[in-house]
Amino acid sequence: MFHILTKIRMQEERLVELLVDLHSGLPRLGPGSKESTLKALAMCDCLPDNPDVLDIGCGCGAQTLVLATATQGQIIATDLFPEFLAPLESNIREKGLDGHVRIEKADMNTLPFPEKNFDLIWSEGAIYIMGFDNGLTNWRRLLRPGGYLVISEVVWFRRDPPAELKTFWESNYPAIRSIVENIESAKALGWSLVGNFHLPDKAWSQQYYLPLQKRIPDFRLENADDVDAQSVADMTEYEISLWERFHEYYGYEFFILRRPEFTP
Image (cartoon, rainbow, N blue to C red; front, side):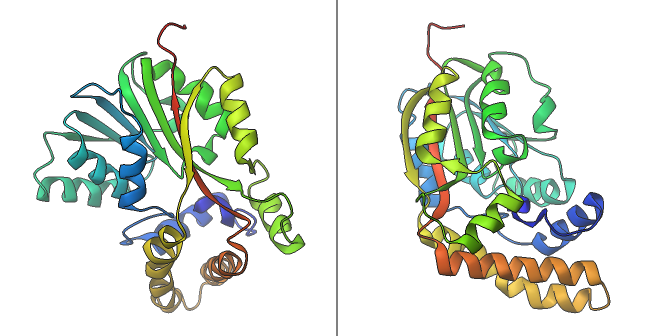
């Protein structure tokens, strides 16, 4: 969840370097779970038998591997950071999926693929980088008519967040909206809503935060004299404490959207 640390005062390149270091070797770069990925995939019930799939912002590829074992098609997994793509590529080879999954370093803002090339576009916890509406607008051209777009996006579950939480999110991700606001925006942009659901609490606490909490002490020791690194660790621990205290107010929502079959 790189977006929630953007208020730390340091050069962006340095911040990204430290975040990559902090998350190196973790099973996930953000909240998620195999069960949630499979639940969202099952809602795409009109996919062809061998779908062409694009996983945007795949990171270390936890969901990529789930998709690769649950579908019979071809998957292209893209991310901007080779530090995460390299271990994913190794995992793919070890699992014998290299004929099924292709890894590409690519910027989600300028994806180098032809129009109407995919049956399914997937993006867990990454669309915030370009913005919910921009992603829905720009990625649409890559989908065939009737194709699916599945994304997870951080949202407000309630409209009355405590002042501390509201200040934090408005500082770090001012584009955060409610579920209803995102659904209304998606429909206005020409998408059909297939369904949506909350990412469960254990996808935060067990799947993401627990490994991250175990990593932080080593990260601090490895960067003991680095003020920037200690700031990143401090903010990460603060982020975790916010979720532990206020998780009923916000979280990730899966949105399963479909491009209508007979529209441009």
